[in-house]
Amino acid sequence: MVMLKSIPAILSPEILYALARMGHGDELVLADANFPSASVAKAGPELIRADGLSIPELLKAILQLMPLDTYSTYMAAVMDLVDSDKQKNLKTPWPEYENILKSYEGKDVPLYLIERFEFYEQAKKSFVVIATGDTALYANLILKKGVIAPKNA
Image 1 (cartoon, rainbow, N blue to C red):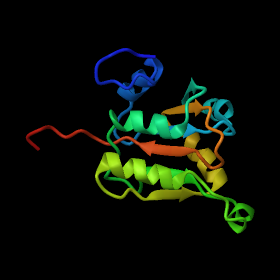
Image 2: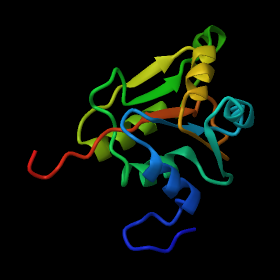
Image 3: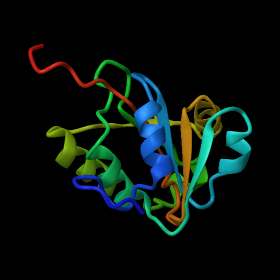
């Protein structure tokens, strides 16, 4: 826990340091409890544990500090459901994510769907994987960092 003014207390020093080091276009994965975070991190991204925290609460905290990329194909991406889960009409946390994203970005932010195994490969290219304790199915979320323009731009 970090006790600083205007910094969400749930963001650990490790998360803050990762956010500060990320550049434009770098990606952050908010991984649910079922995601193979340690395996994915072996391919390169940093692994930060955030056990006990949910993705929605971390998303709200991160969006207070990190701009999203408005220049790329997507600002936020999720793992698409496999066909059998689509047939079951499995509920996902995505509507909650869309509401959170809209509240921080001031506009609708569509969630880009990435096929399951492509999502794993994309996660391996990320800057950081934050392993949460979120038990919701299909809760994984990729955020792409944007830029903060100078005030006179």
